[in-house]
Image 1 (tube, rainbow, N blue to C red):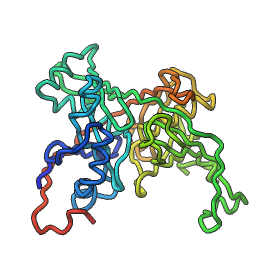
Image 2 (tube, rainbow, N blue to C red):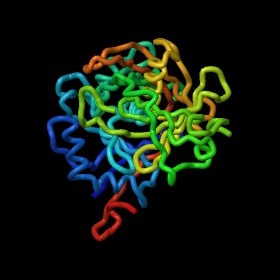
Image 3 (cartoon, rainbow, N blue to C red):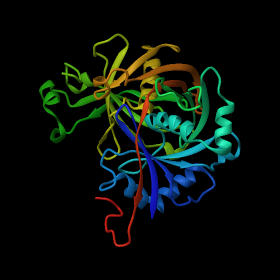
Length: 341
């Protein structure tokens, strides 16, 4: 087996884009193909994500050129997102990387389509993710390549809040020092959806007074699971800046500010009255704060109604991605590490 990949990073968070060699997926819809990847071809994910070819923090994107939405002309390409534990429904940092990659590596009909949309120094594409259509805007140079000096932007699927002020009991054997000393046995959290479901909790609710630096889905049952936990800190230096750290999958820590998590946080801020449509904010991770300009900009664009009647918002997120390298991975006969370490 030979699989060719291109590695990129967005604010330090890796995206391994599978370019060639991935087995053909079965199914007529993207979610059916996602299930096939999970049930029949998961050894390929393990091969690419885990050591010795990957590592515990690796993230992947498998391009799927034929989906029900590409056939209907609503999307240009599909994608499956994967990580150290399995498959996710949305990934903002990978969408940003894919936007730049697809412009640079486009050929044939896809290239003609992308170039025909160039206006005001940018082009657009519709990415079919498991959560829905994600519109990506990519700045381009006069030569038609992605312009790395300007951020890539994506417009989220509708984001919404699943619940606020949810009380979570902390068992005595799981308590940490700060909660034990506070005398509390519960913490208050929110649940919000930004392409995936997140638990969102303020760092001070967890007992860290000095901050970080010192539900069901209405239309798709396959999206009904908790993807990550985001610990937020609004008390960081700088006007309109919020820091956060996202834990997801099997203990992975997102180096980037987490694009789909930004969508969920913006939706929560709008519901809580702390943000209006059109108001932007810079979202940083503890890693991106070390490098100026590595944060994500998140803005609520439009209020929408969800299929179940609740209110949601579409969110615009911007960030920068960079190339790391290209590799052809091989699996030799007799190699016992095809499932990784």
